[in-house]
Image (cartoon, rainbow, N blue to C red):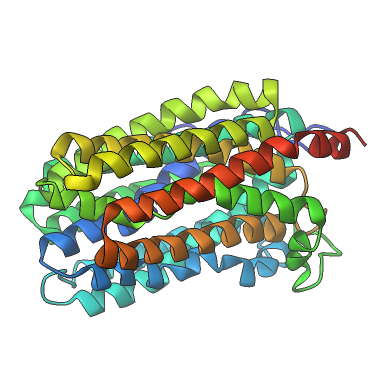
Length: 414
């Protein structure tokens, strides 16, 4: 990530050249390292400390700034420091805030101060949310149509590599040494990332648009029939994955894995599967279209849920728990490539950061809600009913995506 500054070229149409794509991967690597530690690493430490599923579910509640970032996304479209760059200034500022919050993490302890830990997560997720909003606006504004799937694939690959690094170099090697050592290593990575971020020129020198879209205009993306339908399809397709997302830590720990082993399985191998599926999905989206790929992903998720509903009837074994976490990551990455490459081209001028953030935020808000529902259902009825409900949702999403292909193709052609 550190090295020579990434110089970006802009064509007459306002789209950056393919040299933006490695920068997107580097940004995603930095953002995902911190974000994945919160939603996957912290629950492992809490569960290992003996806390209940209720406390673990609170992690997703205090992560709400991640999914509510569309509320302040218009600020990202309207303001920015020209010297640093319109979107780049928000990316830098968000990373600084995240680094400060990580410094406070060292003062917390999952075993004795879980409430303080949860409170520190709030500003950290605000910083990550600002970065993600600005990165999404940069991609929607500067990537040419033929490079959008590649841009989303690079973002997913960066996120996947972050999981590899987090799972192997942080959790597997350091988690057994304790919380403070693990967080200190993550903070060191974040500070190194800040130095590398200063070398990425991105849109340095660019100014916000003179006539930005008004506040709350980002909600217009859900007023339009095509994007509203795409949002519902995307949520249903991924239902089988997001409903069980909050259960991965419980499954791995309850199957007998330690925190370090669960990090290795869920993050290292899970994100390796995610990278492979993201790179495999990119040419398929280009060739067959996003809706066809979403339909295929929904069908695969349905099969995944049904298989594990049967396997988990007597409780998960170590092998079954590992397969559950790894396959989920791969399918989720593939579905994201399809849905986000579709919505990127539907964002309005002057509100690209806001509208893209709104779509992704609403998608994430439903995911967090389903993760919480999954934890509650698991505590009441166990795994199989949760997975059967998830399979039904993904089947509906797959059918809807398949039946909507002609409509979306007609709209894109016009």
